Length: 151
Image (cartoon, rainbow, N blue to C red; front, side):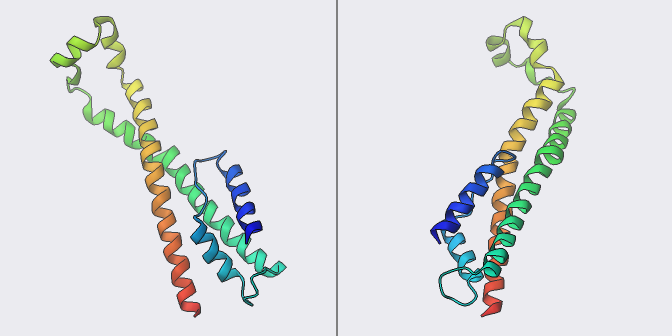
């Protein structure tokens, strides 16, 4: 089991180069190992290990794809629509804006492209984490239900 945990952590170090996806919890790894250990001897045969590797890779790929969809589709579209929805509104004319922002900076702060970029970053971070967490919950529920059906 220790070797499996080391393998998973090494795999997620590589995955995190593409997206900030945390590795599965120790409990999830234990459950995946137990379900892969068909003969119950606490050791994985080559076939058992292959099945475990496929499950781990598919879980990681599903989470990675979900994060990429949020990063490259959902967050940018949401940022653009948010900026478009707020365009024409004079949000920067308030008293606080007049006191805090120098006159020469107001044009830059009102730039729609700046806000699209900033909102995209915020949405990628917040939505990306929420989507990864949601996908993880769904994958864990699917795994637990498959284990219950096998028993």
